[in-house]
View: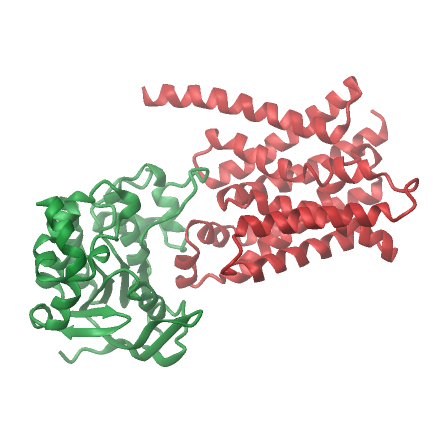
Length: 261
Length: 267
């Protein structure tokens, strides 16, 4: 692949209160490429995203963003107070988008005619699509997605990932995302970065899937049981995203496996 | 109508009009306790004004901005919760203000007027000041309205989309400080937050957009001021608490009828 580089993280380290969060992490996203970061809780995934978004400055190393890079960011979730009366359309127009652009973006993410819906009444799946529409309204070169299927049911997760792949093709943008769905990561991602403070292993999904470092981090049995866990956590919204991470070693995985199957 | 009643009405309405949109933002960002803290620090500001023999408006504003800055700097401290921090600054500055005021010749200072407001003592000079503060606050909010909404919904998303989050937070803090300084005369430092929070919450059940809620909150605030003033005139009750009581009644009325209306819609 010889597409232009959009983002390059080069040997970046970050520490909070003396605790190393990221240790000499390097990562590159090119146009048209989907790069997925996986790793247990506390692996520094969110910090890495913040570096990419320029919300965090590395203590050492550097982060290069192509000059004039337009970034569309899809956060994990919104924390809007129920006291704020806000419709989907009004939310999408906060960034300065025109009414016509908002209508178009809603069609693209599969939510036509949902502009008048109060944001608080949107379902988990609808909210994630609204957040994706918001990112697309930036006409991004780079999409940064922080766990894009949070709060989405299993059928919706597949649809959401399909949508992300479609969007990448249509807009020719690069995609950097955090994901917990290892099946999808293996099927649709161009490049996987397995993070646990440092980059344990990275490369093409198949290559990473067979890497001993990857297997040590996630465990064989866990990898097979991912779908089961996600079903189990489906309606525990407060625990979303902890799915992979509670079982970050094979030893921790074993007893939980017994409980579920 | 007696002049002093007219002045009181105008001053109260001026503050209520600015309190509508500002109070809405405070409710949306869950900053009620923050407003309280700035309001309580106003007493310390007033005492400082007496001590330095300068206009208390200036010192009230200065102390509120200083407290707000301390808060912004200490926020995220690993060993202090934000709510504890607010409690310490709020009650610390209130107590310090009370102590400082007691050091003056007690006969010359009416502590009650600071704590509960003294709307009937508003003079034309105060009116100009309230008008100026209200205009500045409203203009600032109107100019940055979408940006302020954006940081309310998701601060980091707003930052990625190019909003100057820190400057907007500072703007909001200064606006609250100005409103506190202006509202001190109207309802007093103990009840300033009520004027920000109660009309905004009363407006919520009837609003479908942020703008509707801000405008309705301003209107309900004006009604509360007028009703409270009238009540205080006829029943000979203190004006500040009467205004807040009227606002609280409006809230109860709005919410109980809003709930009924909401049930009707769902059915």
